[in-house]
Image (cartoon, rainbow, N blue to C red):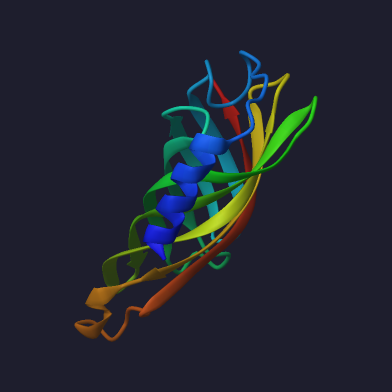
Length: 161
């Protein structure tokens, strides 16, 4: 699966439609994005844009009842451009990284990834996005209090500085 995503990413970068990029568009001259998401879990997010298609993102959040917290650090890469309009650009992205799930009686490292869609605005340095992912925790076999699998399903936005 990861190989397929990497091939699609390489293909999209080679054949992508050239777009007029504004200097204020997220991921161009404005590299550091700060924002929040709502969903499962609710999170604060920080992203450093390597270029206009890729970046390293961090998320820190908790579920609604705050009985666990999750810290994620991951690579996010656009691989398909859905549309480019005067007001913004809509891309589909994949993500992969590491996660640390913290529960009152257990801590578990893991890894995983997912996919999402992002609308980056051209006249303001901001984006809105939705993401869905699945994460596995291999140490769950050692600690029965930790769930084997975790999911993310959230929607949010970032402002770039």
